[in-house]
Image (cartoon, rainbow, N blue to C red; front, side, top):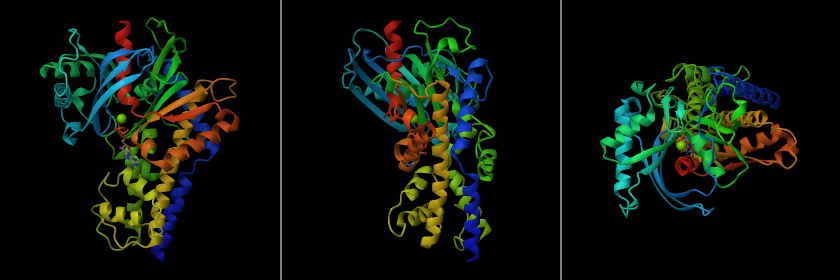
Length: 461
Ligand code: ADP
Ligand code: MG
């Protein structure tokens, strides 16, 4: 009984510290909008980098031809090929292949990583049914989705600012990732031209805009989190170059690095941060994205177990292993609808060697998942509200429709996260404004977006 009381106290404390009432979320949204402004004002003006993507025109639906895409972001990477029909026929054919990245490559050398990518790409191309698809002697055009902060100098070049998520390859920082890829492709004898370098948020925006002109932002909730949106070029004081004809510029926010005193940060988050590959950075991302949610829950469970015999007399080796409990596991437990929470029992046993749990124990574990996922979803909604605020689309809009395209495994698969995000955005915007704002799942924007931008770039070259 004492163990139960102790565990309940830990959870009650967590619940309180993770509270996100609407007033707090409004502060977060305002802070996000302010940071966006500060980041646009001058280089280094905000932790939210507000990087120029050099994408000044988004796909229209009229793009035509065969294009390739490469998507490197988290744990998998993908190669794809799309045939664009032009004239609003959209994608007439697409093929893709997903490959998981060997973990040792995430902390090896730059040439190993890019060598691996190029070799997989070369295999994909070699397997093409008709290898002579490009008989007109043109190089194959490739869009590269590279979902890490990059300082761009043009739409097809950019130097890596820093790694995030599980990547840490020192010799790549400060290097031009397109040049690295181009070199690796040449070594493979691959005759391809990198026409665009983007990230997954920009790709999601482009992929969704291709079908719907009311899309104003692309947002990712996957291994990490990020957002991109269309800004007026003349509203970017830090921009020194010539303004584009379109008058628009897609901004890659890198919002994962957002931080604010309003964020409800707990001891678990602080410890997670301190022991991470990038302490002090990506604070918003660490509260919210797929790489971290399971890890936060693990830390709470560990605390309970070390303080009490709540889980019985267990071996703590597994429970002490960082990142062993993954977000898909907490999602499965959170969605468990069996009367005796059988799935929770299974996940605890399989992953953490916690056996023989009572129903009461399982319920408490579900509650922890709920607290952590709900906080994440509500903070995510606040970020979206912040973007709408910056765009002046958070007030009563007459005939103006705003669509936010979202992609990423967390949003796609974690139903309770997705539902809570949508509900909370409605709560923040109010009934009237909500009618003109839509959140939609943009399936595979990040993959196809790069190919589309490669297409729209090459078309006007
Ligand atoms: P990336 O961000 O690496 O490009 P994805 O968008 O596919 O990749 O997102 C993968 C992330 O989504 C995983 O790291 C995981 O955290 C989360 N995820 C995947 N499946 C699930 C699931 N069933 N439930 C909850 N989260 C999931
Ligand atoms: Mg991705």
